[in-house]
Amino acid sequence: MLGLLRQRLSDFLLPSNKVSHKLIVMAVLAFLTFGATGLGAITLMFALSTMRAGRDSAASHGISSINSSRLGGVAIVIIFLLFLIGMVMLSPYTPGVARDSIFLHLWSTVFVCVMLGAAEDFKADLLSPYFRLVAKLLAFGIFLGTTPGAVPDAVGVPLLDKLFASQLLAWGICTLFCVGFINAFNMADGANGLVPGIATAAFGILFLEYGRPAEGVLFFVCLMFLIFNVISGWFFLGDTGSYGLGAALVCYGLLGVASGDFSAGFMASLLAYPCIDFLTSIIRRARKGMSPLRPDNGHLHNRLHRFYSPKFKSRVIPNSLTGLTISALSSGVCLLIYLAGWVPIESGAWFVVFAIQAAVYLIALNWLRKIQLTETA
Amino acid sequence: MNRFSYTLLVGLLLMLWGISGVSNMSTRAVAVGYDESLFGDVYSPDRIALIGFVGSNVASELIDRGQETVILDRPPFEGEGLDTQGPVSTPVSH
Image (cartoon, rainbow over all chains, first blue to last red; front, side, top):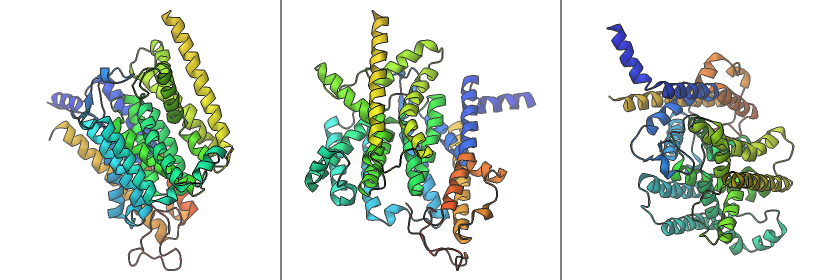
């Protein structure tokens, strides 16, 4: 009787050895970093990752080779809202959206982006690419039009500063930049831990700078998602996550640059990988005569994954190693410099850091392309 | 109830326990005038169990910085002891 009970409990709690090992590692890491709160977040993510809705086959992902759920972004939204609602109910905390019109506009824009992504995650191709593009342009156009404080007067680049002298041009450039950035963020979401790693570093820095709960909760959720995503590979951010996190980061980034809290070079360095990869991909495709937005496997993360794959038996390790390598060498370096205090956050010297990151990206891409061409020949 | 519901319930309860602890800590921080010493050791077992090593360090950093970074911005509830020790409200939060 006792043996049967133990067996039933074991079947219930531990679906298989491999799964249980991953769950234990995730639970330990979550508990060490954020205690019971982190453990709760990981448990919620595990529950949501087992849902049938939003499940994708391995073939539909760039480098993943296991069936996963694309509801990672939905999980992030649920945990974020749960945390904020809990704080509103249990402490005298008033969210920024209820107190400040800038944050109301900012989060309305993020909400529109999250909804556009969610529609795509729950039913692929529900909205046409053109509809999504126009909706994003409208959302950011209205946000920047109604919040002039989010449009910087200058960004520290002489040529751009001349253009930013005109308010209308500055608004147009910023709107295009915001839409381009969230598409870049979505495009970079191709390996476990890549975009979550970048988002964790970015929200961590924003939280340390401002101490606002929204960034603190986003840092917590992104770190928990990073642990879950890297170890298990059962979850992807999906469009909800990449659009939502991308929109929140670009809006906070613009506000910070416009108010002079940090330089444009710092934000460029912090979010270097999506920006450099997006621009390089567009140029590469244009040179081949392809549509600039047509997906391909020429990204650095695709090539790095191809480099790691033969070295491991596991299907998850090369994927996670790819994401962690890139996020650590891009935003991780920026986080390290920030924490060590080597370069002031408002310094224009961050453009030099960004230039070095771009050079490293191009050298790595070229090197991987060459060795992979030699291997195939 | 199936496995999904149980897992969801456990996750929700753990999260709510953590949120409740963090909210309680923030409220106390305001009530005692942002005095870190009243919150005990950063690595005390209770605190680690509730918000972990990263969370505990972040909370200490915020309390050390004082009123500008602690999350509360609404006037405190009556009788929470803000009189001369701490501010009536904090200007920052989101």
